[in-house]
Image 1 (cartoon, one colour):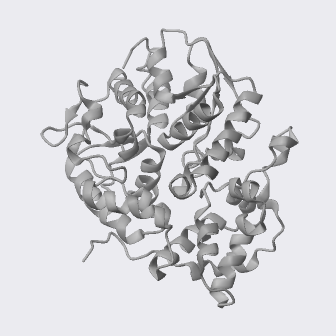
Image 2 (cartoon, rainbow, N blue to C red; image 1 turned 60 degrees about the vertical axis):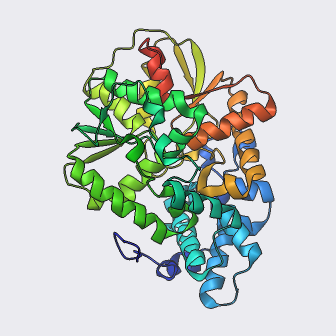
Image 3 (tube, rainbow, N blue to C red; image 1 turned 180 degrees about the horizontal axis):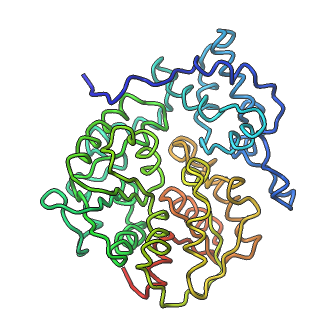
Length: 407
């Protein structure tokens, strides 16, 4: 029997008022236009914009939820495809909640959990993620023994053998993708440059469970959450820092009430801001002469309202010129990598990343800077596909440049 940290906290029917009240007003289909001067960039829903069918917009999926509830509709492959072609970016909820206090993103998350419980979800392409988790404790087929290879040569403490105040939780995606080696090492090095006592679990680090939660398999997610929570509480750490915004998301939203009261969870952008503004232990001595535009990861931005801190870090970098997307902060467009979309609908995911790249080019940026492994992967795929000269950096890489250090 699988371990659980909680019973299922909500089921779809508990949000009946939300999907029943939805009047299809279409406010969910665009950005807050008063904060976006160019009408070319008013669209906000990647799936609705790509497929141009009402069912793919939030208003359409809310109607699908209502139809499931009243049994006017029965699940089928088309409904499954529509549900899983959603990035869960929460842009629709950003627009809707301000006016009607409805929670469409939560409805879609619970629709996915319903789909998994009833056996019509997730997508067949998502099975490989679960199979790899079963075999490797990560979804990307990274052999367990290689999980900690990203940290080779770094003076990080091994928390399996000694104590440290800070757990640096690299996350599966940063650990598995060789193209993300520099960003994850830059993040760990930046914390140490700031004087923090940092350790890592190396090869013993487990998946946070976020991929399974995104596709609606809460049971599988909670298996990992339970084990991670027990381990984190036993380490004696005071802070957990995650460079991955998805890891930070589940730690803050799902793990937090079960962690020791004195454990603080921070995404790397929050930690870097703290070192710069509170501890004042980072000294940016090197110029980084570049025009960059900051991309707000959906989980970091709309989920946690963390918009100002990463920008404050970039603004402190000598020589750096910080630009803004037409769709920025709460208006930001998803990179295309959210919600498990790239594994089931890779062409659609790349379409969305190309649109964001076009927007970066439109504002005159030389580089896109972000703080999420999925965003980094999607933008780099878009750059390659379009043969664009645009550079793509992790926030921690820029910080390390400003410190005059190399990975």
